Figure 1: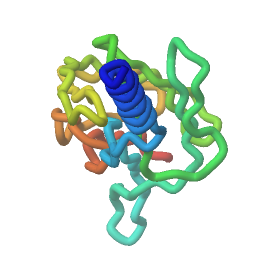
Figure 2: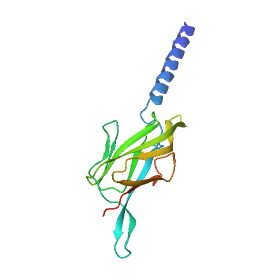
Figure 3: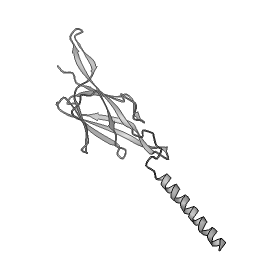
Figure 4: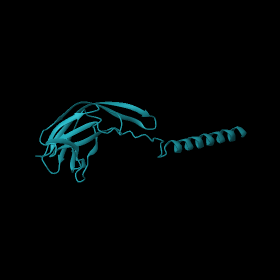
Length: 170
């Protein structure tokens, strides 16, 4: 009889431990505090005429820049004046495209070809995808040139990785 009582007590103790561990391990706060997004930092520039020097000078834009993903319904910006933006690159595809339009003018398509690498952040946070920019193509409606300043996209903090220069206004 004593053995049966001890056996039941052991079973209850084991079940209690399992329930406590299950509740603790499935809590909403998993302990991950890392920012695992990897978006490319883009800055917009324009050329304005400096009449004193009789030449064009580059300036940071503060115009309304519409940015929309191609192949999806995601509009990143369409109403606010911006000079920089962070754009998400597709982690499951090697090509991401955006429509970019300055002040209701003709839109340009910017296509970024990239390699994707999954990197384990931690057991709590899982993986993140880093990108390597291979090439950038763009239509030349209003965009004059694009400079890739940093080809390694590995966090969500680095600015000015892609510099977009719009054509000068005459």
